[in-house]
Length: 454
Image (cartoon, rainbow, N blue to C red; front, side, top):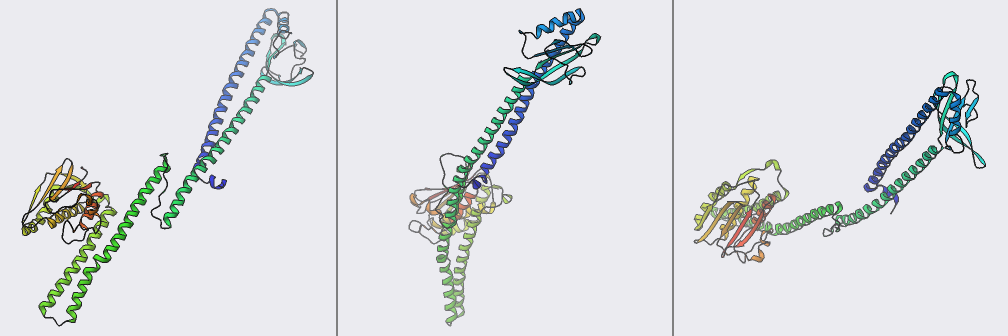
């Protein structure tokens, strides 16, 4: 795996960005720590120098050089601190006491000053920095009190070295983690890309692998696999629909053409011609109805824009459907009854009405003429529509198959139909987030649609 490809991944770039931000934060923290630590040390040192100058000045005021010189010699003797620097000079600059030989040029006036001195260290001589405070005494005498800053300089050097090593470690860690994360991401993406290429090549049964980690890649893979399952189902439905259309639509059109061709070839009287034309129109209407059902199913499965959804009263929809089919029921001697309560749901009114009419049409088609009974019931808790009949029913093991396109349970529920009515009902119910279930009515069938309430 090439490094360039790794660094083009989002994970590697994010790791690089986080490393830069971490280093910036680390640098700001180290700067603040350095400034705070060194600042405290320097302030303590300056405060010590000021206190020392005040104490020695007080000795000079009390007894002049006679008291000041012994005090300085005591502070620079063998038992004194090794980092202390003192110098008492006359108005002409001659040394009276202290461990400096000459007055430094940098201390021309009063106040704090920093200068370099040479100190013997074993057999050699080293250069050290001294932080001192110069002070003018009465009668022109001058006093210089300082401390060797070598330890502070060493602290600064060590602090900077440690900070550089920390920054270098952070950069190395960031680069390493970027490469590691990039490789992991590329490995996951490569597997998904391979599956995508196989799917693009026509292998719709392939799926993006899902691990047991449950991370964002797994969630994305699960979402893509769900989409592929849906696409495969639609493609399968399209193949079934194409095969069925080639048979179910061609057959009525072929019969219509044969009728018209026969009427054209024969010398038929007006009545026979009218009958042939009527039969042809019936076949054409059947084919048109079949195509209309397919378009309705496609519309329901494709989804309806939310702005066309309104609050729908299922009781009113059922009442309108019962009123529409009441003459058909009376003609066939079937008892059609409705038990409804005001029930609200949100959806597309036309599609919901189409689903209800399809359920009623299916129940009336298979209810026995003369003593048939079809009952429609609407409940509000849960929101549901139940349509039951006393026809031949459907075997329980075929309940799930009856909603597939162009499926007709002719053996159990004899009759002619397109096999699309219940497919449309299922598509509409799914669109509205509901469920469609079937149960045995002993005899007959119960179809129950459950929908979300408002």
